[in-house]
Length: 135
Image (cartoon, one colour):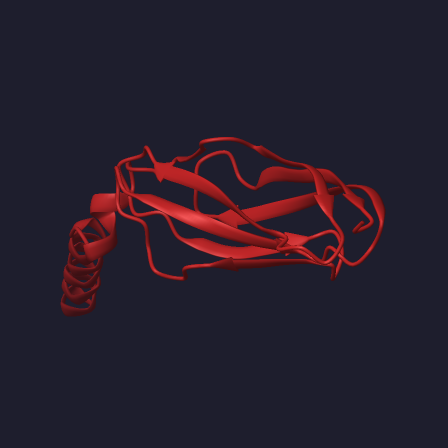
């Protein structure tokens, strides 16, 4: 009985020691990534039909942990995002490339949702403009 109790106490102490030991990820526990966009709205203005619809959103990781963009969603298939899957280290900048299909005439406003590990959750960006017919 005494031996079983000693083994149980030793087991509990050993497990509590391993739970308290720091891990590789503990150094990031108090650190957070913060994504700061230069602008949250890109205004195309008036652009000619079938012209280049590519624009950039520039951002900086102002936090103290690596920033990882996990997904970028748009409100329709006419807007295609392109971004790096590599982590953006603290103080580094990155780009989110958005290509809008300029075949359709008229005004447009589209939403781009950026999902990442950044503080504050998803970030909402907008593109807007007016497509005019070529002369």
